[in-house]
Image (cartoon, rainbow, N blue to C red; front, side, top):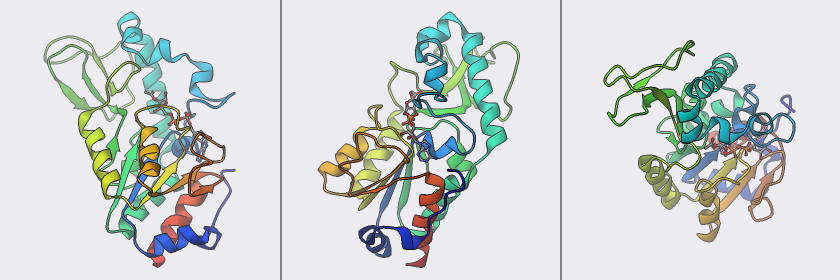
Length: 254
Ligand code: OAD
């Protein structure tokens, strides 16, 4: 599957015509876009992260309070995968699409920072970023980490509480700035590309729903079906690393 390719000629006519008009575009991405960088998705039956590890043990405030070392070990393991994998053709294509279109905004559920590593700008990160660390207490300290890290959980240099990855855990609210950026992107959009997400986790999954309700062109890019598949205007079945470059090429040629 990683070998699959598509060309602009493979795009459905309606989508090609839409891209030729230089649409304001919202790209919503999920774990599938990073799958070909070697980073497991969450919900795939055998390989998905949640098939191997329970969210309750690793991605909740309670898990962190109970065993911060285990939570940090998990996020550091994922940092290592991200560092080793780097951005793939799908991430690069999203950056290319931004360069080709006057208005193309990226909203992601991914915490890996790989869109930015590929050159995308202004990415709204709905679930945070695991390369950022913040005080788990209430002093407000925050810093960027460029190393994977090891050893005991890091401590806040300001107040001595533990630092935690600046990601959204189950039961937590999403960052307001990212939610507002997503709302603005949706309000401006003619075209919504939904790539590599199971469309199961809200509020992110509400974005394509709202786009459909507003009558926008919604395109799904995913090798598998999701609750969105039968309602999207176009379903591009296959890997994001094949379809997003074809879309970016069509937008560039317009
Ligand atoms: P999921 O693991 O739920 O879904 C990944 C989707 O990517 C699936 O629908 C796969 O079919 C698809 N996929 C796999 N390989 C692909 C490829 N090469 N190209 C395109 N699509 C591919 O991941 P998300 O939808 O991102 O939240 O999950 C949403 C949230 O649930 C995550 O942000 C995470 C998780 O629990 C938190 O941790 C808070």
